[in-house]
Length: 509
Ligand code: ADP
Image 1 (tube, rainbow, N blue to C red):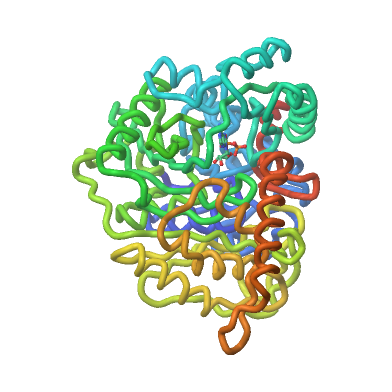
Image 2: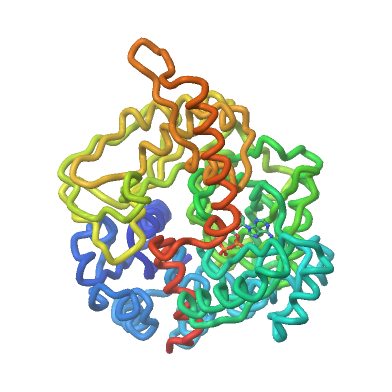
């Protein structure tokens, strides 16, 4: 087993990894930028080293600096977490050159599965259904338009290097194609330094379902079941849960087998996630592979009882997976909400600042994967994820009740958070019935909130209600056509994800 692991990340995920190290008796080495000097991961790690100024290109994205720390600290392995360099094949290669074990997939598997079009090609070969569309980047927009016409609108133009919903455009007819192409490619160029696009059929209100897989270096690949990630705001996951209300045991087995086939075809080792869209008829279509640990991995941990980070470390150390798929029986229900420092009243803009005080939830079935503490200042330089609140219960109803109770206990003074959004979602009848899809939350947020007076009477005449509903429907339609499939220019989705992908393209040393 390893003696010392370098954690090439920050925030809650760095804390999560160092906790696993401590339980395994492995020393943890943190890195920090100038603004992270007082961060929780720095406080909790066994050792911590500065790696430069706040901009991640000069700190967390600098492979040279990370390798230098690894050498100086005498580390024998590196965990990349998620975001930043986690999906950059240059990192495992640099680790090999430095004599470090990379806790993640081999560089070749990252390349063959990590790129969206390469992943689609591999899925074809592995007999895994993909969303209809092109498997190569579009070279000739005119030909792509002809194909779109033949496939039938609406279609999605998507960035080959995509992430965080950037570089995506919904095109509803021939007339919109040219401008959609122009907009999507310039947004992709801005976000990722790569303007290549490909085409997908736009599925109507699908579920986003992903399969967690684990693969060891001895040929065993297992599926740990699904996570339901359909509650999204502009293509960013907001709530994740397991199991999904729509997945039958038969479908779970089929999707698990498809994910395992794909992982095998790509020579995958370690933890990974195969993302699918599932339509109303329960047909599933491959979307992409995330060649790393996911933000939402605790959901799977809660229903399987497994510690995915410890398993990642064991796999990287050459251990065999100690079980077969048949022996894993998911238990109960788990749900995760991502608590962000952002202002729901100001289009969810980041809301950095000092946490003056806070009260954190606890009690039965509650897990808080935290990256902050009272008195700490949330910097403006990174993704503003504060903590992940995860509830577990015997049933979906009990899980929701626990999560609701935990959100009532949770208070933060000094910064704004999105906690109120979850309180609202958890009271929505559609959500309670499990009737969600990837557009559900965007549509909910387009809808005006019904005000209820103190005595419980709903305010407003029926004519006013009808007008409000008509306005909301118009707005939802406009949203769907113009903005829902591309984050607006004021939006700041997953900054680390964008920067990480850009770094990949720049081939940082
Ligand atoms: P990114 O990598 O930019 O996050 P993904 O391909 O993972 O993009 O898709 C993110 C989300 O966008 C999906 O979960 C879904 O909500 C929506 N989406 C992507 N492709 C399609 C499609 N073909 N039809 C309908 N919705 C889609």
